[in-house]
Image (cartoon, rainbow, N blue to C red; front, side):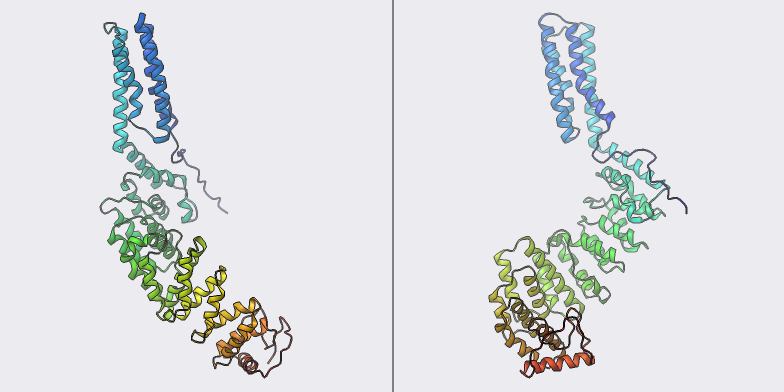
Length: 477
């Protein structure tokens, strides 16, 4: 077996946020040198001038220490010049003899230090060094020969983290990597763009092209995530097409990238979300799960409307609303939210599947009340909802309230309801109807299902005597 190539870097990459030791040393020298020069000028002076210059050296040391602390916490800034400027002013007001060559030398060096620090800060503020570093890192990625076996692992390389930090000002240095023939290079560049907020004209379009056309699902997913913070409407609308991408990982990346800010984006993507939920190819995807953010009021309104539709659209919209409300209940179960959900459970305007979903959530999270259970037992409610209330009552040993409803539902000419009722009768009332406890109910059109239906209807009509259940045994027909 060929050994896997080493992923060790040819040259060490600094951890993002780490300070260059050479730059730290240069800063220390720039901060301490004014004090040293004032001491030198004081040694070459006499009388009160010497005292003044020595005192100024001490003050410059204090200013240098303060500046160093500020620079360490906030980055390079113009305060670095403060000790040099203070030394120049102090030397001038100390009435030093500038006819002395030593004093003029000290003053000249201090002026050069101040101007040099100002020039350095101006250069850093222009972004030139950062762009130069970004180009160097991009070139190293383009020429790299050893890559991880998985494309997803390419996103975790330390070079990618360093490139992401270097691209703070402009994405331009890494854009040529997107046209590279090596998929590993492409995905590394896309990972460096991840969650980028600012794009110059035409830059986001290059990433969007990969999101829509790359033959590699990993690259399409990485491109979608790279545009998650983009707020250009045309780009977001085009990116919404990835909600119907054939690859599951791309669809999940699209959900994370597009739905975290539905407050502002919903009007742009609602039609794409509708088409995705209604697409029968993605029925097994289940609800739209948001790892961050929440659905806006407009999004909730649309999802409620879609939940009344037939087919996969209604099912997935209902599942999405159920997950949304479940997360809200676990995070902050306010009385207003509980009342809203309770009203929806017993509302005749809501769909049956929605009412069942919300009722199950309230039961699972322990927010189902006796008052709501009694409302669910009313005959005007759908039978599946009534059976759900019956099961909750039987679990709490309140059989007198539940048995009459259970008999009423079991008498209905509906085999699916009859099998559900039979399961409850056998599990909680210990009447053997031929079901195996803990096993799925038999197929609706099987002979066994027909016999179980007959037995549960006999029980509902008081024609069957209770018998102990042989748990785990399946009656043969």
